[in-house]
Length: 265
Image (cartoon, rainbow, N blue to C red):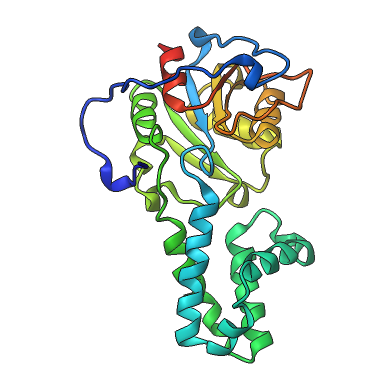
């Protein structure tokens, strides 16, 4: 079972028992973890997509909802993009043809829809309401089972700042109360792994980067970025992938967030 934001309660945060704390080292990372220094941690920065919820099922569902809306309001466009993956492929192409939107996931999606409407001979002004249909569904995420209990526990002990290259709004998702601030690549003007967005997140938390523990799933964007910014790194390795960025290494590797909470004490 995964949690949706509707499962949130005001109960005192506690840590449910988990079937594992950390996965076997040989299944996870080479070289070994550096070792987490919990005494140094004064703030948390936290990735969103694929750390708190799985992103691609969410995007696929949002694209299905958009396709249904287009079928009613712009049928020629719906027919044009009926093949599975068409919307996503066009958005990826748009990132090449519109480098000015490189950090703007919403802009890329909106302009992709506009281009489809134009190609199909439908009204390009429909791009805005069509995008809003997609964007609303994009925020109907299903949190990983461990995400909400861990987020409640972390935010009761540390200032937590979201750092994302995506376009999720923590308030629209329904978890905004747990965050001191939220930074994304479009709003800030630089994307992970750029150290500047990590340093800005540390400032938003009111601490030095060396006092931050960054939590994220992407070994390059989250991992290399946070480490080069001078933070400690908790790599959330749900898929048990190998670490490919030696000589850099995470300070701790976990397959679920509650194990990290226990490590922090």
